[in-house]
Length: 372
Image (cartoon, rainbow, N blue to C red):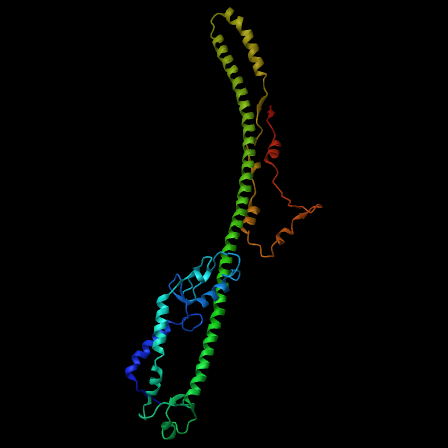
């Protein structure tokens, strides 16, 4: 059933008033703003009572204005844009009133008090029967219609009801639906707030675990560096001991070589002496020295393999494999300590196996032996 609107001259004004009314609806109570209207820092408006309800819900421990103690301010989020509103110790009463919106509401209410809607309903006429008003509701077709359509027109076989009763019922249903949506929005907002807190907890917990993990790996680095320093010092000590021993033998053999070289030079010069008597005066002594030097048949030298430093080799394959398999502990916190040893006093002692000191290994290396 189609129907015409017979108040076309007033249609524009009605639409303008409807649009204005939408701008004057509080997002909390879904009713027109009630005085006083407060303006938030994000420029959105709320009824002071609604703003106070949100503030009290977000700050349950905040003392009211009538309290004997002075409390610091609190905060809540704007229901329109989620902007955080920070209040001073006066709470919602410290927010500025929006006098412009209050004046617009006064003007709107004055204009709404005029019988505009009554005239509109009087001019709502049936399209098929131009002289008939739309005064009944067809339940079968679910559309408003007029009495002539019920008696003679397309709705004569349909079930109808008074327009006012259907209007009240559907308006009540719509109001209930709005209330359900508002309640649902509140639950969703609570869930969003809870999930935001979960996100913050995830960030805090991750930051803390990263710090703990870095500290544990730094501890491993320090242990490796300390052990590396100890082992390098062991090799350096063994190196110095062996070098001193070999260099001492080199000096000893050098001295012997210098003495024999001079003796050879002296002996050659003596053999060139043309005078037999002079030659015989020195020959006996030279022959004795040469004989004594020839009897020195023992020469100290390092034994074979003395220069070898392979006993300082370290096998880190099992340690490397263990380091590669480091992973997060999947059990409950504290379970990793179950493998530690408990002393009688209740103190936890961790056994640590260290490689045999390189100094002990080096001390077993044989020192120079005599070679005949």
